[in-house]
Length: 69
Image 1 (spheres, rainbow, N blue to C red):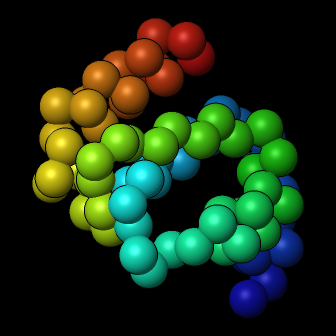
Image 2: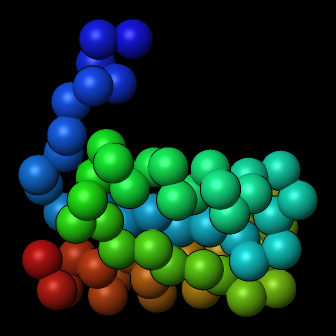
């Protein structure tokens, strides 16, 4: 639990399926305290497993993030 108190200062990409029924908006808002500079990417049409449901979209988001940082 001690590690959860650390604030990340490196670039962070958080990928989230826009239709995810398990990780709700309140949880996503709380995550910002651990990575205040994070970039959120919502994958339209994907649920809890966007990396499987919309693999091409997740790959594109990762490549964009890597190119920008």
